[in-house]
Length: 387
Image 1 (tube, rainbow, N blue to C red):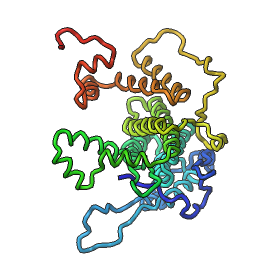
Image 2 (image 1 turned 90 degrees about the vertical axis):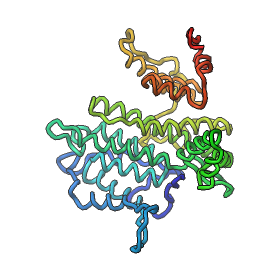
Image 3 (image 1 turned 30 degrees about the vertical axis):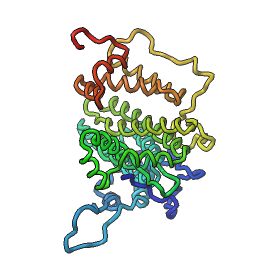
Image 4 (image 1 turned 120 degrees about the horizontal axis):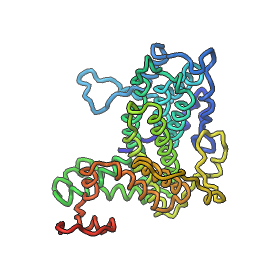
């Protein structure tokens, strides 16, 4: 079930809350200034009280677990406090990757995908500017502790992103749903074709059906999907940039951000398709996003420069280079023609090119697709002997 972001107006934090015209747009440069003292990245706070305070503020009890006879009020995470404490650490004490990830988590819970996009952008900028001195530091060439927060980001925040609402009905006739709900509805639909009884039982148990999800989509204003597309696209591009940066810095020791990027890509594609169905025009460069102080990348396309796209000189020398160029071309088309299916198809092809054969066939031949249909879709002739 979708987990609603916290109320954005539930009291003001101790610093600028980053809201501009109702949109979350923190000034990231404030977080990137060197901390006071001799070391621009500050000192480690792993054994300071504030580190434990942040961990405790993040903690929440699982309501599904039985408390037995010692029933007490369940503890809920205080994301506003997490946000305030993490901000204090990064600005005043320490440039710490784990603290930046926890701040991103707090922004995700408080401000939804807009907060997630801002947090990922902050992590990218903080990592690029302070890599040599960033905490936790690389000790005697051992990079394991340094990359740990990024692995945590991929494992934990990918899960949390899947629980954020991707629908927001304007009436009480339906409720918000998340990416997990959408996928669950699709699975239930497939189950009903094989075992109608099992599907009915799952629905009686509270499972989300595709019909319920589509009703929620229909009752959600198109402007919501425009904002969802914009925020999830920014988050996805920041995740891509962070993934490339970690590969450059850590090589084979770099953690994968695959789960995170996969979740964001699915949400981005869903929002883009739904937005088009509702007649909304996708755009990054809203009037309220023109201020360069936001800390976000500039995603607008200069039409005068569209014919001046630089390409790599010389021949392509490796398979990896070819796929990287395809991915870069798709990124450009995504910004220049977000209404077109072409960049999404190119990105899907790049993903297929990196998959083992058995995984690729499992994806292409799902939902009863036969080999004849597959070859027809790909514009290929069926090999002899495969009829």
